[in-house]
Structures are given as C-alpha cells and as structure tokens.
Length: 411
Image (cartoon, rainbow, N blue to C red; front, side):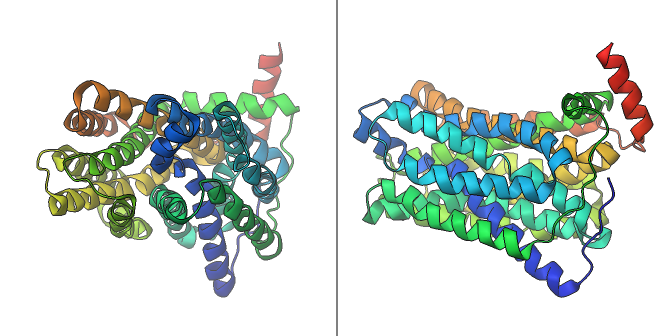
C-alpha cells in the first residue's frame, strides 16, 4: 500500500482542523445519551438500566462495525469509507428524533452506531498513511484529542439542547452538522491512493489473524478496553453522583462540571513530545497512574472543588495514555497497523459499551464510591500489562507471504 503523503504545510494545518472536527462530531454521538438516561426513563417509562441501552446499543454496533469497516477501508480507501459513514449518519440521525417507542430508539441508535463506525479507524489509518512521518504523531494526537473531547462535548451538547428544547432536537440539529462535515471531507480532504489488496474480498478479513501473531498486540487491547470502561463509567457515575442528594446539582450545573474536564484533554496533542523524551511505555504508565489516582480519590470526599480537581487529574491521565497506546500499537504492528488500529477501536468501544452498564450496576448495588473504586481498580490492574509488552522489530508481511497465507487458509 503506497500513498503519497501530504507535504504542503498550509494544507496540513487545514486538513488537520477538518479531520479533528469530523472526528469530534462523529465520536460525540457515542456519548449523547449518557445525560439522557433519566430523560428516556421518564419519556418511555423504562428503568434506568433499560434506558442505558440507548447508549450501549450504539457502542456495541460501533465496536463491531469499526472492525468490519476498518478492514474494508484497505480495499475501498480511507476517504471513501469516511464519506460513506458521514452520508449514512446524515440520513439516519434525524430519524432517531422522530421515534415514539423505546424499541425503535434502541434499534436506530444501533444502526447509527454502524454508520459512525466507518469513520474512526479510517481517519486514523488515513493520518498514518497520508501525513509525513514528522507530522504523524501530531495528527494522531489531535485525532485522539477529538476522540477524548467527544466524551465531554457530546454530553455537553445533549445536556444543553435538552434544557431548552425537546430531546428530539439533539438529533435534528446533528443532521446539519453531519451534512456540513460530509461537504468538508468531500472537497477539502485529498483522496488517498490506496492500492487494491491482493486476494479475494474474504482475504481482507483473514488478515485480522496477523494481529494475534504479534504477542504484544493482544495485551495492548486489554488496555484499550479498560481505558474506555473507566472513562464512560466515570461519566455515567459522575452525572448520577452530582444529581444525587449529596450535591443536588441541576443539569446546567452538571454541564459546567463536565466542561472543566476539557482542560485535562489539552495534554493529548503534546503526547508526541512526551513520548520522544520519556518513551512510549513510560508515557502510557504515567497516564494510567494519573487516571487511577484521580478516579480512586473521586468518591472519598463529597466536596465539589475536590471532585472537579480529581476529575481533571483523571482526564489528564486518560489523555496521556490514549495517544501513547495508539502509538505503541502502531510501532508493534508495523505494516499491519491499519488492521491493528481497527481492532483497537473495536476494543475501545466494547469498553465504552460496558462502561455505563457496569457503573449503573455498581451504583445500584454498592453506591457511588464502589463504582469509582472498581473503575480505578481496572486502571490499576492495567499498569501490570505494559510489563509484558515487548517493542520488537515488526515482521514484514509482503504481498507474496500474504498470498501464501490466503492459499493455506483456503485449503
């Protein structure tokens, strides 16, 4: 797969902004329904655990679709896959706002998750292949920042809209946002020159097996899942905690508390410099330590200033760990990095799917402190994983070796 990297500095800057924006608005969709759990429970007369499926159905579809469409982008091209996802989002999203039953809400959110899943693995692969090597860590940092900011921006957006309008307008307004994003990608992002892979359509999916031939890659995916179980579980627990009798904050007050977390995300674009100085595994460790400390201390003292401060510490940790993890996966994977990153996104959103389910269960059976501590414990256990990750020179999977593998598998 040979691509012509982008070279013009002004184009680089503008394209970075476009990819950052589109990554932000697509992934924000994952988190839209976290503040709406109580709204859906009231409107559709379901329990809070059932209402959480409006988010989890999206995330499960998003996880599975990301792996499927990430592999397909090798065959059809990164830009085409990004455009297909945005076009489908433009069509499906306004339909969600018109539903009158909870079953249809969950079903359409799952379809929306499939549509959105076309974008993240494709944009990461596009960045790795089309940007010059010296700019690659920067663009990955910005895209990672967009993914992280989406976890707050999506919640702020839906919380703000529902304060003044019916919840349906959250999805009606997003129709225009996705249409504009589709136009931006169409006219301002250059085409990638992806070569057609050798072999049949099915052979592209057989390449997924290569990631399990590198002993360290599956270990990286443990961290991928735990990071987002903790992140989405944190936001779910935090919203319920701030709305409880301990704080009694209004939706608008909670919105501002969530917004402060963006401060911690500003670390992510500078992760490349930290990696250059400290090494990728050390930055990953530091991120997991910061995240575990912030999350572990959150529920110990019911003081709003302390809670906000620890939330920022937790977000800083996640913002350090995520770009470092993507960089580590890219180093280990070598030529199969596109598939490796797709599987990372799959595990990330498996984690995002489990986060709200786990946190609501823990809140209902043990309270807010138990939820915060269990989520922090997951990050603490993840600290062990990098000890077993080796940074080896990746093997080269040539076209001939791939064809041999396909031939053997066909037999």
